Image (cartoon, rainbow, N blue to C red; front, side, top):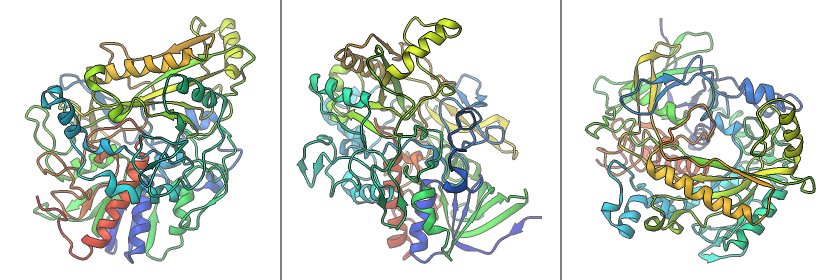
Length: 591
């Protein structure tokens, strides 16, 4: 028999960045909010405390802080003619679980999208003509602008204690930052983090190439800090355990450290952990949500009625819930109709490793997740697509989030993968090598989408989410171009050896190798309900009391990490709910 809880003003699915932001904003407005998190409760103490958290076996092999794929996963295939198979071992991307979600195990790179990233399609058409866009590429403009989101980019950076250096401040280019960024209303919350050797050498190489290097915006505190909510952060101690791990030092921004300390004591907020949401409940006409159904910590089916439903899970699983709940029309790649599942995109990522002799001490065991140096000279409008042959752009960066024997140690070309010669190569390389990475945009395509799998089910009897995705010529060209430019930079530094991993013509998406957790699209925002699932306020076109903030809303992925954009869009949505929706519940944009 289903347990029915008392009705609340809002129910939130997931307690990562978007869920925490929404809970804070809506309780500020006086709403009673229940948050349902499928994983356990987690906090800096005791879950991320030293020395327990700095355990490579637990964090990077047993994947303690990641989703249990034995219970809920996705199936993956390259094309619609292939049979999808389940994602059974963490490889290409890493969904989080538990309080904090992926926001507790991320690295900390915190970029803003460029102004031109918001109008990709119209920008390409204006510069090169409509025929320049390849057949089957379904890129769209965002229905919001950089200028509209700037206050929310700014606020999120101050909540996170983001460390960096402005490049354009109130319309004026200033020394030391990114001269190509959108204008900022004020400086970063904190100054840049100390650099490591590879980052310092990146400055040298980039400047010799005529580029404009600047510090990576990093939500890893460079100094003691108190955010606007009164949450305190300590300076990063370069422990090298950011990616895959929670922060032991209150230094890396996370929902756990930056928002939850305020929420936990609020009368209007309730957090229920180990609560697996199964579906959004709808009225008979499917025009309004009445709440959600979930399994509680004891496995009992429970219904939580609510006036507003906020899907704040990992981007893939926001799409999954929309499909399972019958919200909107599932996407059909043959007719290019329907909205739920369309425009799935990922992130184009490659690495160039540099190896030096024993006079160069890089010390890979130290690191700051988001710290380092980068350039935007190949990103956004700096990429002349007519010359390079691809749409989009990307960044090259020097970053050292930390390394160790379990996570893997790079060796120079020619070193075998095992035996005494491998050990010798590891000894020579570990302290005397570092890497640069190229991270490129990923466009959306008619044949890249998310749907329900007809064969496989999860532990709760629901069809798994099925991902259909492969690399296209545009992204392969981008990979080759960016790696070539990065390699040219590396040659300036005269290393003993360089090893790059650019994609080759005909390469397929490899789900077994980690590339990024930047899965985007599937329930995108737009101006037309025929080609988007959400309006400009991330409100469902079909069910007006359902909102779905997250990277699922991106029509395509730009060259940056998505977290900064996700946070800004969530604050943008929360503002619309507070100032518009609560006064007059219903569609905020007319279809």
